[in-house]
Structure formats: structure tokens, C-alpha cells
Image 1 (cartoon, rainbow, N blue to C red):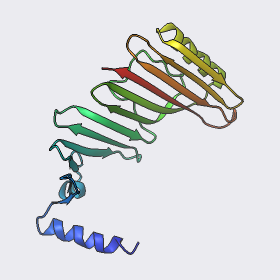
Image 2 (cartoon, rainbow, N blue to C red):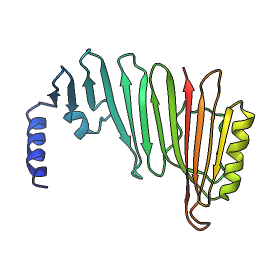
Image 3 (tube, one colour):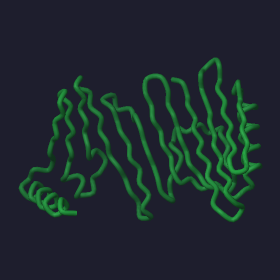
Amino acid sequence: MKWFMPLFIVCGALIVTGCGSFTISGDDDEEVEINLFGLFSGDTEDVVTVTDEDGSKQTIGFETDEDGSIEISGTGDDGEESFSFGAGASSELHEEFPSDIPFPDSSQIIGSQRVSDDNEVMYTVQFIYAEEATKVYEMYKDYAHSYGYDDVREFESDTNYTVQGTMEDTRDAISLAITNYAEDEENVVILTVAKAR
């Protein structure tokens, strides 16, 4: 906590004097620029800009809402979103998440991530559910088999269920881990989907 007050004074002085941002330089010509004016004024869309040694830039921003949920995203030089992370009670699926993947009726999304590169886009979703774990497990097993996933693997234990599958022709993949602690507790699913580009 000793560092908080000096940091607060420095940041406040920078804003008051018109220095709305500062840059941290790395060893190999990398830079991280933090927009303090945007951060403190509530304009958090492009708060951080990271420049790598090749001159490529990635802007990072975030949004929060009144229930404390947060979404962080990054955009590359080409204007394409390279990642997004969301967490909190009002988390939502990414707009590009495959619409054919089912969810239990009672599911409540508590986290959602999207990461991409030149070869694939990967989505990870965490949600809680109220249905019996075996019914959720069967739903995803049926999905994996009926939507063309090859080499579908299934695993069951007392508290965990797992389904994994890949498509040989596209290398798309799905992985699902279900945790079933007890009937009266919130049970969690972690669903990961990878789509080839």
C-alpha cells in the first residue's frame, strides 16, 4: 500500500498538467502507452496501446457495467479484434460464437473469452447450470456426434464429465468439462471451441 499514494499523486499531476498518457519502453523497441486521461475520464475503449519490436500495434480497452461485470478486448493494426475476455454475472457470448452449439435452459454465463490468430479462433465459455450433470453431458455428447466431430472422446467420474472431439477435414475442435459437485450447489461447465480460419 505504500506505493499507492505516490502513484495516485503522480497520476493526478500528469492529468492536471495535461500529460494524459505515459509510455513505458522495453528492451527490444517495445512500448506500452497508457492513456490516463481516458482511463480517469471513463473513455476506456483504447486505454492501452502496445507496440512490438516490428512496429505492430495492439490497442486494449475495457468496459464495465453496474453489476461489476467487465469486458476487456484487444484490436490489432488491421482493425480486427484479436481477443476479448468477459467476466461477471452479466457476461454474454461473443457475437461470433457458433450459434449451433446448445446450452442448457438454466445456463448462466459467468465468463466468456475469444482469442484469435491467423490460423484459428478459440472461444471459451464458463457457465453454471441447474440441470442434472448427466443430462448436460448427454446433450453435449449428442451434439459432438451429430455435428460431424470425429474422434469423440468421453470420460466420466463421480464429479467430472468430459467430451472432446475434432473434425479431421477442418481441424475444428470442441472440448467440454463438466463439474458436478452436488445437487444443491452451482455446478460449472467450461466449454472450449476452436474454429480453423
